[in-house]
Length: 448
Image (cartoon, rainbow, N blue to C red; front, side, top):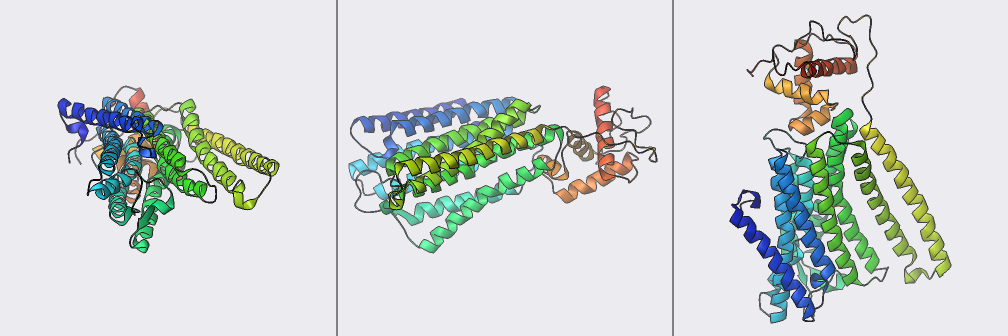
């Protein structure tokens, strides 16, 4: 299948038309009296808005030179549109009593999984440079594809059913339950891979690199938070006794919102020069969304009919949980935002080391002659404040390779062993002085 971003303009128009027809068909089915959350106007319009946001982000990402992230955002747009198309197809097949209705429902029932992986891949690709693909991307794609296929093959709607089934557990049955459970666990673990890798790289870095990688990590975190919300809906159903159709619509809105948040984070990270205000909004939004899930889940359990708590007790307990969890999330995310936007401290000058001139000192006779293009790339990312993990994340190489490049750079720059941090700071300063002196790549070797 060819990515929509690589199709001619006619292909893009046709994709947009297909999505528009699906939205119109679902709304028409709703007006005709066909119930079920698949035709609910709130969920339908939310998915359409999410697809539109992904399409806009794809165009802007390509405009800032990040074609890979732009292509992945286009795939995300296509996945959200496919959800709408498959929903319209399933409603029509079920309404017509077609023998292939079960196939249509199975395909639609699995259409929510690919967007979760694509929103992570888009946010992750926003900070990458070069043509290489990080190992986390194919692993996530393979795991998500496996889970999607397993869900489509093993999960079927109970027969007979009226209209389209909701998230109510009794509306579905799963064949080979151990296999289905394993696929679910595999999917959840796969969605944790990219955020954990990015957060590790961000927190180990300094300066602008830390902020950019942190914003991308927050964007990738939206997917597991959406899965947590899905699990919360099961709690809301039992013991919460919440109407399953309402919960299902809420999930579609959450899926669309997470897609828009991830693509927005990708666009911020890809542009570079992330502002502190942007970091604070992104980090606080992620943290407060997680806190809201905790509060809602706890409140649902507390208010469950089985506990038989009075209205006053429920209100008091929910308020207490909200204050504790919400206040902790606000304080914690504020501190995290400050950490991500903090600047690297200046290294103390060592009078015993003739090469240690401090941040404000001129470079003097130290030059960058002899660096290979890859070493120059490593030094450029190092100058942004990136740690070894941050450099590896952006250049898509292993940390061992980064360490080898840095050792070679230090030798070629004449930076003698001392405090490791000081050598990194001095090397970064050399690069920045060359850039500030408008000498560009002068003195750099073009040979590998």
